[in-house]
Image (cartoon, rainbow, N blue to C red; front, side):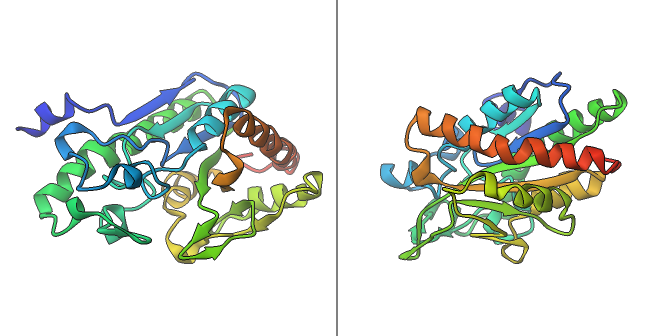
Length: 261
């Protein structure tokens, strides 16, 4: 099967509200646990295909809600991160992990260079190209852009409970994260922390660096504990809570007159 034939069989990326003119761009790299037919199920059991290892439960729903509320474009991967993790560069092992926490991924063992390149070309590059296209269009239209990536995380990791409920993550550019954390008292019932449960040292800020920093955009990554996202109502509630942090933070950046607020 040629690459062009393979591409015809997979829709790797979803772009919602591309014409949105609000001052945000929403990314959701782990929106789906879909395993395209040409890759099979990677030898995973059904429970593992539905687990947090395969996707970020609730992240897409929150992303769509934010997209609508902020009139923002949303770009989301439509392929499981176990096929390719769009928040990782091609050269790292975690882009196509053979093990995710305690879950082994047989179909990712001993991948050839050609197999890795195929996944990069079919999953990662379409996602990156879609993000770049939206950014270029917004720049051409003279629109300000804050890049916001949405994720969820498991409450128990390697047997350890995580108390944090909302993580506000950043890399070198801290402006948006700082502004959001300054408003954290607006959610007194939530435990909101900086660079938790992950941080730059864990390699999770690839999208912030590639799509945010490299384009000079203010940026932030939001992590929500997925046991708080067990129903559509909980997803909506959390999205609205996040907006109480995002909206004033974006206003703060705009007032500061930053180039990208």
